[in-house]
Image (cartoon, rainbow, N blue to C red; front, side, top):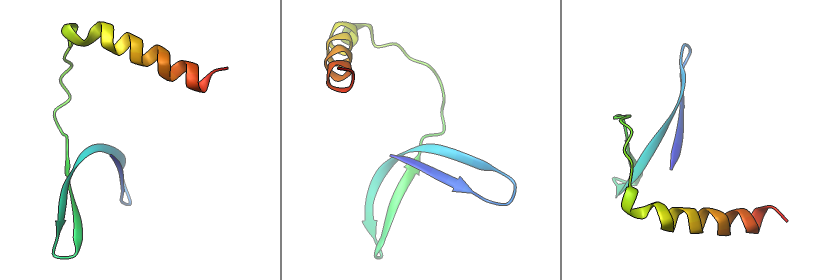
Length: 59
């Protein structure tokens, strides 16, 4: 989930994990580490799913 946090000085968007509902509030945990990582073993699966999704969007 993407969460947009705005205040008077900074507008930022965070990728967050949904943690659950507690005390009648929804709780999320922002992902703060921005290190790149490759998943070579999933490359062929990603390509197939990307192509399938593109075919659904682009006629």
